Image 1 (cartoon, helix red, strand yellow):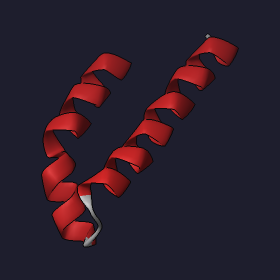
Image 2 (cartoon, one colour):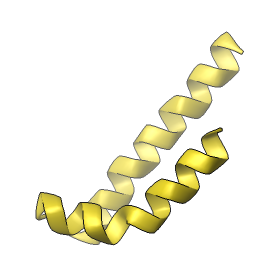
Image 3 (cartoon, helix red, strand yellow):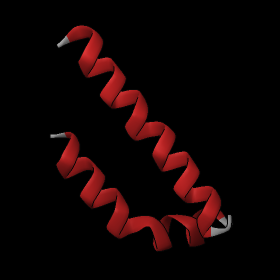
Length: 46
């Protein structure tokens, strides 16, 4: 499921950045933190 989330979010990065009025690099950082958090949660709680 994380792979699907990552794929969907990766495709939507330009729109997310435009809607939030942030540079694409910042949107990438936010999304990376989100995905790392999801993966860490899965590792801890299975």
